[in-house]
Length: 157
Image (cartoon, rainbow, N blue to C red; front, top):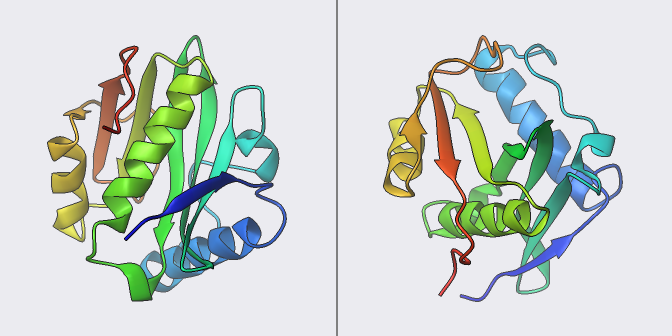
């Protein structure tokens, strides 16, 4: 499996479709209704942000964004893996690509949050080197907040 990650305008397809699917899933699961920390397509734009779409076999398999928080700190947001590609390591590859993108944008630290369920997401972030931190964004749906320093090396071998 070889995923090609492409920077895309988060306000246009296919990125906007992945963001919409993410928000629809949040709404279905948590009655999200757009509440919680925001992220607009402009947040996922240079100079401090980016939205990556992972293409697999010519179709979007996943997407996620990097949003600048300031002072060398970025947040990974709206990570989404299409249902057909879940449980195949795509989420971990997306996380690595987003960390690399944040590093390339000059960020020294990345943060993220996730819900308490399903618990495998928290385990994935801890295994990827995130340490649990206090709530930094007031997301009422989050049950885990994490932070990871980015060194000068690429995450991918």
